[in-house]
Amino acid sequence: MQISRESRRRRLAAKVQKKLHMPPATRLRRFITRHFMILFGAAMAALGFVLFQVPYNITAGGVSGLAIIVNKFSGISEGLLIWLFNVPLLVLGFFKLGRWRFLAATVVCVAAFSLFVELFLGILPGMLEPYPITHDKFLASLYAGVTFGLGNGLIYRFGSTIGGTSIPARIIHNYTGYPMSQVYLFTDLAVVFVGGVVFNWEMAMLALFTLVLSGIFSDFIMEGVSQLRTAVIITKKADQIRFALVNEMRRGVSMWDVTGGYSRETRTMLYCTVSRSRVNDLRFMVSQIDPDALVIVGVVQQAWGGYGNLKLNKD
Image 1 (cartoon, rainbow, N blue to C red):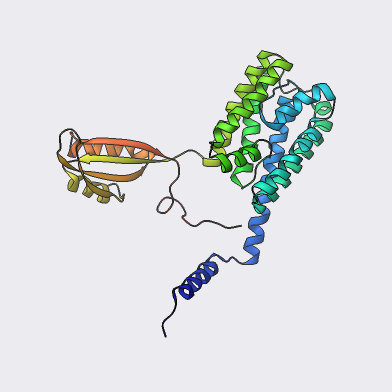
Image 2: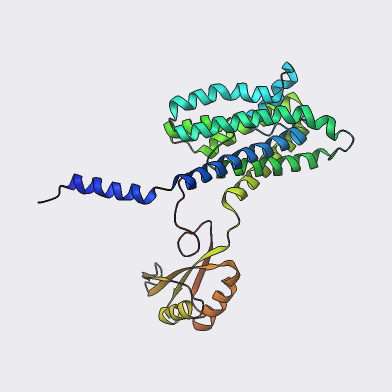
């Protein structure tokens, strides 16, 4: 009896689901770990915000920066303002994005961040008054960028956001194709500019410094420091270099025949991935075999299979 194409598809889908299935204990452990790290990141971001941004009016973009500005005129606490600003954005995201898991984690994170801000505002100023961390505005902006960036990076890494401008940025990107990074930049710079008008331009410059530093540390937490490099080698002695790569450096390699656009000569292009510590070994090895070879080395942000685990954990 001939099996229909639709039946084969259903069977294949069932096999894939079976392979992706995890024991309940494993799923629970990953769920707890994920939400613990999100809460830890929210606490760290709130700590940096309360200790270093609020006292010096460093309006480093986003809803948190806007809360500092509005607090000056209304007297409403920053933690409550952050929550009030985020509620309509979360409702908008609920209807426009429709990603239940993402929005649920975002609601948890926004609520936790707001609560941590309120908690720290009530405890830390009095506790640290005899032992201030710093009186220097520049150091405060530096500390704010590091702590807020590390906390934000943890939140992003474990599949959530701190709310705010990230929600409209995703919506604008989905509907217009406009890059999210540019939407972030526009909204954050607008908040920094308003902060400069309300407070002073010195603090606006420090807020811009905090914003940039926060982005750097957030990216560092999400992606880490790359230890890998890719090498493209164009040579006439491909077999000798391939032999050295495989047998001496213990690296896999892919090969293509290529033609020079200017010389029209046919050569071989080798492509391989090596650790950062072995780039000089690669350069020396190629120079000994073919001094006329062209070697191009690039940074690898991430690599899976061979260097890292290819399996994607579903929680």
